[in-house]
Image 1 (spheres, rainbow, N blue to C red):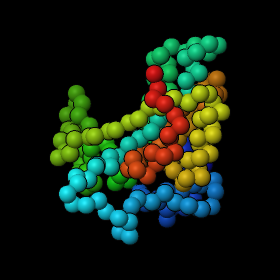
Image 2 (image 1 turned 135 degrees about the vertical axis):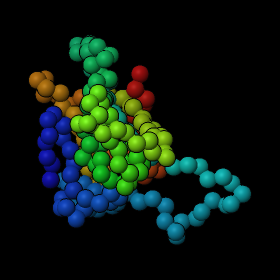
Image 3 (image 1 turned 90 degrees about the vertical axis):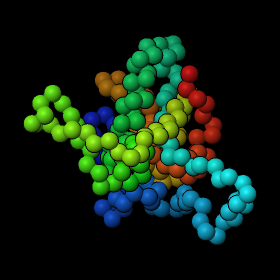
Image 4 (image 1 turned 90 degrees about the horizontal axis):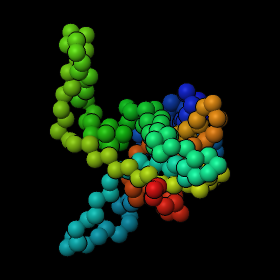
Length: 195
Protein backbone atom coordinates (compact mmCIF):
# COMPACT_ATOMS: atom_id res chain seq x y z
CA UNK A 1 0.00 0.00 0.00
CA UNK A 2 1.14 3.55 -0.57
CA UNK A 3 0.94 5.91 2.35
CA UNK A 4 1.50 9.63 2.25
CA UNK A 5 3.25 11.36 5.11
CA UNK A 6 3.72 15.07 4.68
CA UNK A 7 4.65 15.59 1.05
CA UNK A 8 6.45 12.36 0.27
CA UNK A 9 5.15 9.19 -1.30
CA UNK A 10 6.55 6.07 0.33
CA UNK A 11 6.48 2.59 -1.08
CA UNK A 12 5.54 0.38 1.86
CA UNK A 13 5.41 -3.41 2.19
CA UNK A 14 2.04 -5.02 1.46
CA UNK A 15 1.90 -6.68 4.90
CA UNK A 16 3.73 -6.47 8.18
CA UNK A 17 5.33 -9.83 7.37
CA UNK A 18 7.40 -8.11 4.71
CA UNK A 19 8.69 -5.41 7.07
CA UNK A 20 11.94 -7.29 7.56
CA UNK A 21 14.95 -5.59 5.95
CA UNK A 22 16.05 -7.34 2.87
CA UNK A 23 13.29 -8.24 0.45
CA UNK A 24 13.12 -6.04 -2.59
CA UNK A 25 9.44 -5.71 -3.42
CA UNK A 26 6.84 -3.47 -4.90
CA UNK A 27 3.60 -2.67 -3.21
CA UNK A 28 1.92 -1.66 -6.46
CA UNK A 29 2.47 -4.95 -8.26
CA UNK A 30 2.58 -8.58 -7.38
CA UNK A 31 6.16 -9.83 -7.13
CA UNK A 32 7.75 -10.84 -10.44
CA UNK A 33 11.51 -10.80 -10.43
CA UNK A 34 13.46 -9.85 -7.33
CA UNK A 35 16.88 -8.27 -7.44
CA UNK A 36 19.16 -10.64 -5.59
CA UNK A 37 22.76 -10.44 -4.50
CA UNK A 38 25.23 -13.04 -5.72
CA UNK A 39 24.40 -16.48 -4.34
CA UNK A 40 26.59 -19.46 -3.59
CA UNK A 41 25.92 -20.99 -7.02
CA UNK A 42 27.59 -18.05 -8.77
CA UNK A 43 31.28 -18.03 -9.51
CA UNK A 44 33.40 -16.40 -6.87
CA UNK A 45 36.49 -14.39 -7.74
CA UNK A 46 39.80 -16.22 -7.40
CA UNK A 47 41.44 -15.73 -4.02
CA UNK A 48 44.46 -14.13 -5.72
CA UNK A 49 42.30 -11.15 -6.73
CA UNK A 50 41.09 -8.79 -4.01
CA UNK A 51 37.32 -8.59 -3.75
CA UNK A 52 35.91 -5.19 -4.55
CA UNK A 53 33.75 -3.86 -1.77
CA UNK A 54 30.04 -3.65 -2.44
CA UNK A 55 29.10 -0.56 -0.41
CA UNK A 56 25.70 0.42 0.79
CA UNK A 57 24.49 3.30 -1.33
CA UNK A 58 21.48 5.58 -1.49
CA UNK A 59 20.52 6.91 -4.90
CA UNK A 60 18.90 10.35 -5.08
CA UNK A 61 17.52 11.62 -8.38
CA UNK A 62 16.67 15.31 -8.74
CA UNK A 63 14.95 17.07 -11.62
CA UNK A 64 17.52 19.04 -13.62
CA UNK A 65 14.90 21.27 -15.21
CA UNK A 66 14.21 22.92 -11.85
CA UNK A 67 17.36 25.04 -12.31
CA UNK A 68 16.66 25.98 -15.92
CA UNK A 69 14.12 28.46 -17.33
CA UNK A 70 11.18 28.72 -17.07
CA UNK A 71 11.40 27.37 -13.48
CA UNK A 72 14.87 28.75 -12.57
CA UNK A 73 14.87 27.60 -8.94
CA UNK A 74 17.83 28.69 -6.78
CA UNK A 75 20.47 26.01 -6.20
CA UNK A 76 19.68 25.85 -2.48
CA UNK A 77 16.03 25.08 -3.19
CA UNK A 78 16.98 22.27 -5.56
CA UNK A 79 19.42 20.82 -3.02
CA UNK A 80 16.66 20.96 -0.41
CA UNK A 81 14.48 18.78 -2.66
CA UNK A 82 17.19 16.11 -2.71
CA UNK A 83 17.52 16.29 1.07
CA UNK A 84 13.76 16.00 1.56
CA UNK A 85 13.61 12.90 -0.66
CA UNK A 86 16.64 11.34 1.05
CA UNK A 87 15.25 11.73 4.56
CA UNK A 88 11.80 10.61 3.41
CA UNK A 89 13.35 7.40 2.03
CA UNK A 90 15.48 6.71 5.12
CA UNK A 91 13.01 7.44 7.91
CA UNK A 92 10.46 4.62 7.32
CA UNK A 93 13.35 2.12 7.23
CA UNK A 94 15.28 3.48 10.21
CA UNK A 95 14.84 0.28 12.23
CA UNK A 96 16.21 -1.97 9.48
CA UNK A 97 19.72 -3.33 9.92
CA UNK A 98 20.83 -2.17 6.46
CA UNK A 99 19.72 1.42 7.14
CA UNK A 100 21.42 1.43 10.52
CA UNK A 101 24.60 0.11 8.93
CA UNK A 102 24.39 2.81 6.25
CA UNK A 103 24.05 5.48 8.93
CA UNK A 104 26.92 4.00 10.96
CA UNK A 105 24.71 2.62 13.70
CA UNK A 106 24.82 -0.88 15.11
CA UNK A 107 21.72 -2.79 16.09
CA UNK A 108 21.32 -3.04 19.85
CA UNK A 109 23.35 0.09 20.64
CA UNK A 110 21.45 2.93 22.27
CA UNK A 111 21.96 6.19 20.40
CA UNK A 112 20.73 9.15 22.31
CA UNK A 113 20.53 12.86 21.65
CA UNK A 114 22.46 15.30 23.81
CA UNK A 115 21.20 18.76 24.56
CA UNK A 116 21.55 21.71 26.93
CA UNK A 117 19.41 20.08 29.64
CA UNK A 118 21.19 16.85 30.57
CA UNK A 119 18.37 15.75 32.89
CA UNK A 120 15.75 15.75 30.14
CA UNK A 121 17.87 14.62 27.22
CA UNK A 122 20.32 11.78 26.86
CA UNK A 123 23.89 11.73 25.65
CA UNK A 124 25.08 10.26 22.34
CA UNK A 125 27.09 7.07 22.58
CA UNK A 126 29.79 6.78 19.91
CA UNK A 127 29.58 3.59 17.88
CA UNK A 128 32.43 1.39 16.77
CA UNK A 129 31.58 1.97 13.13
CA UNK A 130 31.87 5.20 11.22
CA UNK A 131 29.10 6.12 8.82
CA UNK A 132 30.07 5.41 5.25
CA UNK A 133 27.08 7.10 3.71
CA UNK A 134 27.68 6.62 0.00
CA UNK A 135 25.06 8.78 -1.67
CA UNK A 136 24.86 9.15 -5.44
CA UNK A 137 22.98 12.26 -6.58
CA UNK A 138 21.80 12.00 -10.17
CA UNK A 139 19.89 14.27 -12.52
CA UNK A 140 16.65 13.47 -14.31
CA UNK A 141 15.61 15.54 -17.30
CA UNK A 142 12.14 16.40 -15.97
CA UNK A 143 9.18 15.17 -13.93
CA UNK A 144 8.26 12.56 -16.53
CA UNK A 145 11.73 11.02 -16.22
CA UNK A 146 11.37 10.82 -12.43
CA UNK A 147 7.97 9.17 -12.76
CA UNK A 148 9.34 6.70 -15.32
CA UNK A 149 12.16 5.83 -12.92
CA UNK A 150 9.59 5.29 -10.14
CA UNK A 151 7.82 2.78 -12.39
CA UNK A 152 11.13 0.98 -13.04
CA UNK A 153 11.80 0.85 -9.30
CA UNK A 154 8.32 -0.57 -8.72
CA UNK A 155 9.00 -3.23 -11.34
CA UNK A 156 12.38 -3.96 -9.72
CA UNK A 157 10.77 -4.12 -6.27
CA UNK A 158 12.94 -1.33 -4.84
CA UNK A 159 11.90 0.82 -1.86
CA UNK A 160 11.91 4.56 -2.56
CA UNK A 161 10.31 7.86 -1.66
CA UNK A 162 9.19 10.42 -4.24
CA UNK A 163 9.11 14.01 -2.98
CA UNK A 164 6.26 16.27 -4.09
CA UNK A 165 6.85 19.95 -3.34
CA UNK A 166 3.88 21.97 -2.10
CA UNK A 167 2.10 24.24 -2.88
CA UNK A 168 3.39 23.68 -6.44
CA UNK A 169 2.25 20.03 -6.23
CA UNK A 170 5.11 18.90 -8.45
CA UNK A 171 7.38 15.89 -8.13
CA UNK A 172 10.90 17.22 -7.60
CA UNK A 173 13.07 14.31 -6.44
CA UNK A 174 13.19 10.62 -5.69
CA UNK A 175 15.45 8.68 -3.33
CA UNK A 176 15.92 5.00 -2.53
CA UNK A 177 16.53 3.49 0.83
CA UNK A 178 20.09 2.12 1.17
CA UNK A 179 20.93 -0.98 -0.87
CA UNK A 180 24.09 -2.77 -1.88
CA UNK A 181 25.36 -1.00 -4.98
CA UNK A 182 25.35 -4.21 -7.02
CA UNK A 183 21.64 -4.76 -6.32
CA UNK A 184 20.30 -1.55 -7.86
CA UNK A 185 23.07 0.24 -9.76
CA UNK A 186 21.83 -1.02 -13.13
CA UNK A 187 18.53 0.85 -12.67
CA UNK A 188 20.34 4.22 -12.63
CA UNK A 189 22.79 3.76 -15.54
CA UNK A 190 20.99 6.19 -17.86
CA UNK A 191 21.19 9.10 -15.39
CA UNK A 192 24.19 11.40 -15.12
CA UNK A 193 25.60 12.96 -11.98
CA UNK A 194 23.74 16.06 -10.84
CA UNK A 195 25.59 19.33 -11.52
